[in-house]
Length: 61
Length: 235
Figure 1 (cartoon, chains in turn green, blue):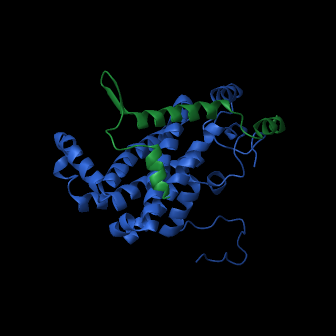
Figure 2: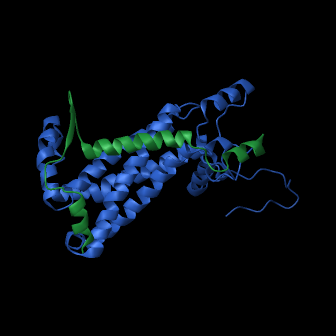
């Protein structure tokens, strides 16, 4: 079966986009998801340790 | 061609100043961008953090965008709409742009909260911000250049907004040839030049240090901010 057909069965796009509305804010759910993922990636990049960073710091001190 | 020193003259005498414009340009370039600064041996230890990766991720996705867009420009709309490889490169172009904006915005957030304009880096910050502002119409004209119902919808929906600003007289979103020219030449060239300037400025001023380290350097009297080789540098 064509993979496009399988995807179409999983994600039915044959309808108007779902939106998030709050006062003047009007965003599609897809864009809200992307913005949410950007926040998650941003905080993970700050919080997760970088491989070898502690060793480099010890080596430079 | 440089003249040989006269016999019996002092070998330590400085060479006469050259009037060649190529020499002047070379000397000015080396003075402004020393090779050891543009291509350093290593970066400071504080660069070993995930948050510092999003700048180079932006450049990587931009390269994929430019290469895939060049292939699309060579092959044309019939190819990208009606063939398998065309669909593939069309999708590569779209998703590399999506990734470019994703990582560029995370990069912008990171640098904003680091106050990356510190230490004489105002031009670094400003060029980065302008890259973002120029990239938005670059992507917008790309959506207008798709040659499908989506581009028709976007152009007819956006024309009123553009016309209300007064820009519509010379930026006509219904004019495919004009939008295509902006998208494949003028705006990408601007983005690439600005990114190159941004990277050279980063190299020249060094990657902005974290707040605490920067303040310690200020207290120690060594806070010039350059990515100078030293005990912190690693390869």
